[in-house]
Amino acid sequence: MTRDSYIRLTGVIRSHPGRIRFVTVLNRMITGLSYLVYPLFLLALLLTGHPFLVRAVLVPAVSFLGVSLFRNILNAPRPYEKFDLPPVLKKDTPGKSFPSRHVFSAFVIAMTVLYLYPAAGCVLLACGTVLAVIRVVGGVHEPRDVIAGALLGIACGIFGYYWI
Image (cartoon, rainbow, N blue to C red; front, top):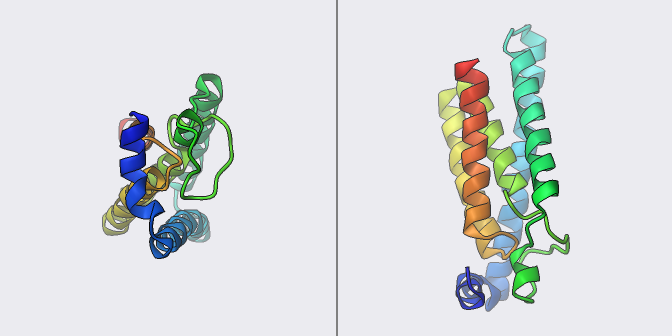
């Protein structure tokens, strides 16, 4: 990604205060949805004594730790660092851009729910896709960051729930 393509990508949002507010609220809502649905899902599994509970905790936890470790080692700069432009979404964390952990988390949670509730999992996958777009147009990730986060979330879900 070049500075010009970054400016074009975020400029549609950056130039309109109403769009900035919309993207900011949508980012918080979708992130909050994922982080609300997951503990409620786990609680439901616990209360029903469902045997999937252990995997539903371990797969996302181990995957999240692995992605976090990889991000820390790689420490890729964020677009606003590379191009010296403020992000649309409020963020000032240096580095750790690749892969997007927000998008990864949304997708691995969606895959977890998808295993038992396909319709709800598909809705969460769609929300994760919207979140990925928001993280890019919000200027805190490049497309490669969110694509990698989504693919890793899906791969961890497939591996943890269908191959093991």
